[in-house]
Length: 152
Image (cartoon, rainbow, N blue to C red; front, side, top):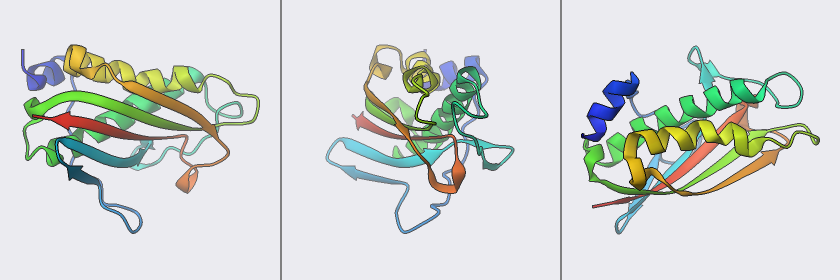
C-alpha cells in the first residue's frame, strides 16, 4: 500500500505549504536529509492558542499535535517534489509544548504526531524524538513541531 493509500484510508488531505511567518524557509535539503521548519498548531486556520496545565487537556493536545503532523506532511510533500513515496524514513521529530511549570505530559501530547507518522509510513515512520515543555511558543500556539526525514 502506498503512502497516499494510507493517507486516504486515514481521511487525511494534505494542505499546501504554509507561508513562513518570519525570516526562514519551510524546508532545507542537504544530501538525503530534509529538515522541516517548526509548524505550529492551528485551529480553524488560526494559531491554536493555549497552554497545557492551564486551559487545554492532554487529549486535546494530542489532536493538536496530529494536526501539526498533517501540516508537516504537506510541507514534506512539497519537499519531495510531490512524491511522499520518496521518504525512506522519518528520522526525528522535535516537539515544543506550551506548558505551565507543573505540566509533565509533553510526551503524551507529542504522541499525536508520532502515531500518525507510524500509521502513514509504517516502520519507516518510527523515529527518534524530543518533547520539551516551554514557557511560550510564537503566537501563543499550544504546540510546535519540526521534522527531519531521509529521502531516497
